[in-house]
Length: 260
Image 1: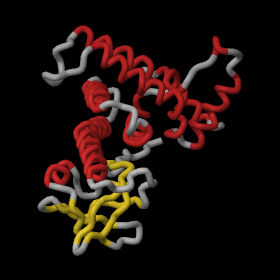
Image 2: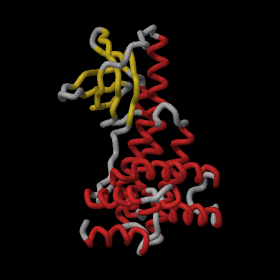
Image 3: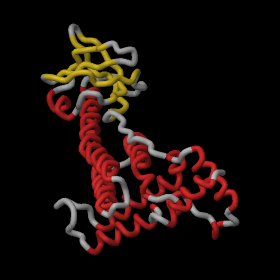
């Protein structure tokens, strides 16, 4: 372990507040000024749930954002912790500089791991709260402005796009059932949406081959977007295709740069 790395680890707790402190300070600030932010701002209890989710995610997954030297020092601290009283988690050691890569991983977690479990409202409120948290960090000079604004932008995008993707998924499932398609089978392949127009889409497979036109209807066409990932099976009918089974639809996975 080099002296530089030890200084970096120390600065996470001495020169900058820890993530845990910024979580508490942000919630306290919003409690004092609840009208700050958009007109449809989340309630206090909803903000607490969103911050708790990010805290838990940081605790269990924050190590993925560390450089090799930081990871080595973090592991050493965990090994030297004598019992629960001396234990400090990731969020109690590292500061808000870890937020950009952490938010990148969190977006993937929210998009995939919680895809079928989280309600549209939960996704919207969580993204709204964490977008506001990132901008709050920026305003208080706790994070590089470009990093904070980029993280906030991607959270806002996810908050808008994921509900659209799930609406389209529900419609496509219902339409397949109405056609008496076999929906019990596992969807066959992952595609990227290549083109959309007039109630039709074209999909690109892993080899770059484009399949289409595929009838999805104008409502689904408006909710979908180019570059999104769709896991589905296709059935050809004359000169067009239909989606016969669909497992998931995801906006293009977003990742923020890792600045370990």
